[in-house]
Amino acid sequence: MASFEEAPPGDAKAGEKTFRTKCAQCHTVDKGAGHKQGPNLNGLFGRQSGTAPGYSYSAANKNRAVIWEEKTLYDYLLNPKKYIPGTKMVFPGLKKPQDRADLIAYLKQSTAS
Image (cartoon, rainbow, N blue to C red):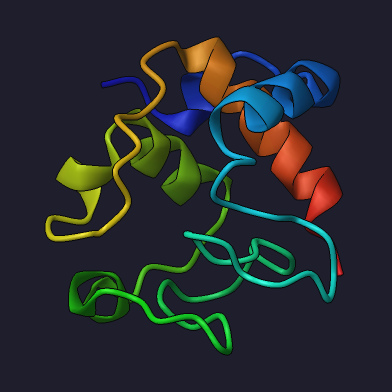
């Protein structure tokens, strides 16, 4: 598996499209927006997994205690269920490195508090 250091540059515009088609049904990014089936991702970078206030996480997500940053998200988004066994996130992942890099670029821009 290629690491984030080897990932192509991310395009936030393309990542926004990926977010809208693959993530937005379960997640929001706007500050103050409520949780959906998944937690609001605002303030994601630098936050520990399983700690967004007011969201009921799986024990697996809380216990994994990963700090979300580009590298961890790049690995996680390839196969969430493999990265955090027992997560309740049903998303199968993004296999293409460009798709993951684009989504991360969008999340970095859109979730900054």
